[in-house]
Image 1: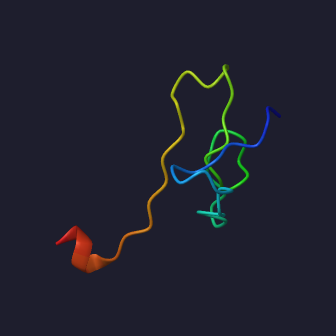
Image 2: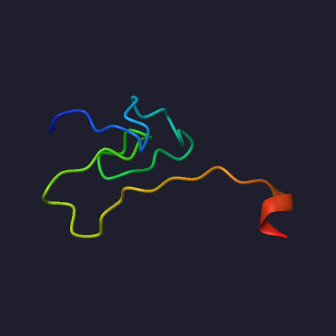
Length: 52
């Protein structure tokens, strides 16, 4: 795995999804490397109010 990715504020990425595991590495985070042609780098948790 490449060096640990950071969030937009420079902090460590937090787990975003564990059921199912998401992300390029299937680690639940937005960690990626140069082999990720789809750029799996965004994860968002939203609620129904946001979706409406």
